[in-house]
Image 1 (cartoon, rainbow, N blue to C red):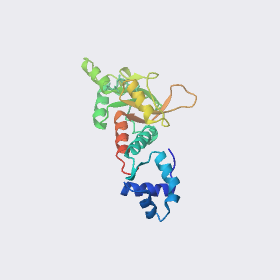
Image 2: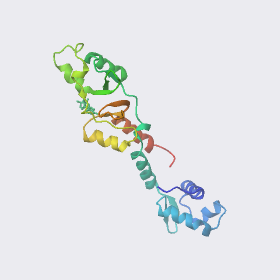
Image 3: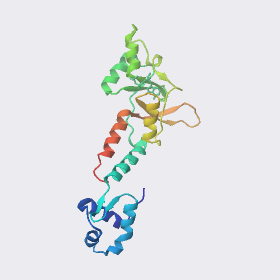
Image 4: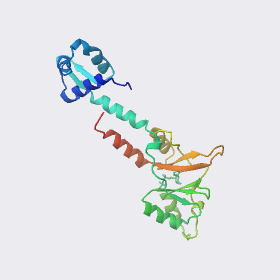
Length: 213
Ligand code: ADP
């Protein structure tokens, strides 16, 4: 994406508010000659920000705005959108985990070991499946039913929302723990957040709904 100069930005604003507008009218508003404006108008039309129609004038290209928003959305960093992870100890009972799920209003819990490192993922269906058996949910620790390391799909804070979305779709899962790898220790992660399909939808709405370009 090119960075606009102050004058190009002014032209863009004028066209946004007044378009379609002729080159002469834009020049008058800026107290410049048409010739002085020509290079800026050429850059703005070539970059796709403005469209020009003979005998009509210049007008703002709404499509490029949407394209830019979509690009911006794709490359947002996980770090800027991650939510707080909802965590239980891995010896927590399945019963307490279910209560926690309701209290926190989330779909997935993360289990940590005594060092606070990521140990497992417990989803709604993991809990439902367990509840269908005749087991005593108060006696059963989540460590028995969770998806555990090294099978957990993770994401790190510097990756993009696009990468997060791909990982969730490709692995048929609703959320990803956001982690930082502990120095030199393979599969030992510090849990710093979570990304869910809702996070992606919210980010999409926020960016596509922005009024300014
Ligand atoms: P649900 O089971 O409620 O539909 P998910 O689709 O997220 O929720 O989970 C499907 C299965 O994948 C569950 O068994 C869950 O433990 C596991 N799972 C969820 N998230 C992850 C993850 N990030 N990495 C590995 N497995 C996961």
